[in-house]
Structure formats: C-alpha cells, structure tokens
Length: 137
Image (cartoon, rainbow, N blue to C red; front, top):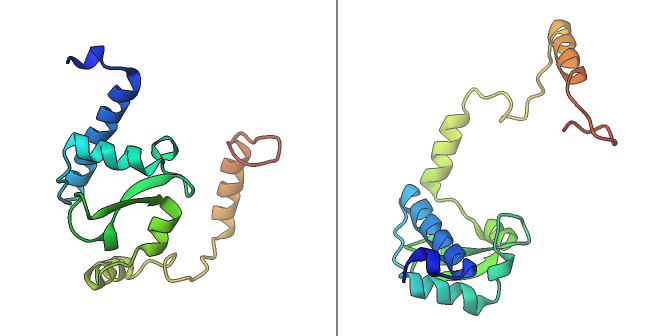
C-alpha cells in the first residue's frame, strides 16, 4: 500500500517509527524493532496520544537504560519517571567531570560582572520584548 493511501494516523505512526529508529542510530543504540512490534508496544500501552517530550508525557525507555531497543527490553513510561531512573555510567560521569574543569558556572561560583558588563546587559535586556507579566518573549 502506498504511503499516500494510508490513513493520517497510520502515516504519523510510520513517521514517528522512522524518527525513533534514526534517533537511536544517532545515539549509537541498536534499534531491533520491526514497525509492527514497535506499533503494538505503543498502542497496547494506551499512551500513544500522550507521547511527547514534556515531564508528564510518555516515552519508550529501555529497561535500566541498557541494551538495544527491542521487545522485552522496553517500557512505556513518563519522561519524569525515565529521568528519575537515569543512572549515568561511571565513564559518563568521568567525561562530564573532565568537560567541566575550569568552568566557573558549573562549579557553583558566582560570577561578578564588571560595572561596564552589567550596563551592557541592562541595555540589551531593555531592547527585548516582554509579555504582560514582564517576562522576556
């Protein structure tokens, strides 16, 4: 069946499947789902309509953040729960630590700007648009 003749929801499912497969490849994580199996996991979870990036939206997560995306090694959980479960590997922590060496902002130090720098920042901020509550937009 040609893609154009598929119902819109089916086309969306196929597009999201390709995005997931490509994102997994970009992250160098094996993606061993057939389209049919991936679709079944999402639809049986009952959370397809709530899929997204927000904390209370849902994602497909690997169990223990280990191994490939495949049947039996994934679950559909909220992004909040996925972030809560995340435990970086020791080598990941070492890389982050090395990358932060010399970064005053990452060390918790307060950066004291010069009077001239503060004046420039105030001027730049005054030129930006604000909403009704005074937040930058």
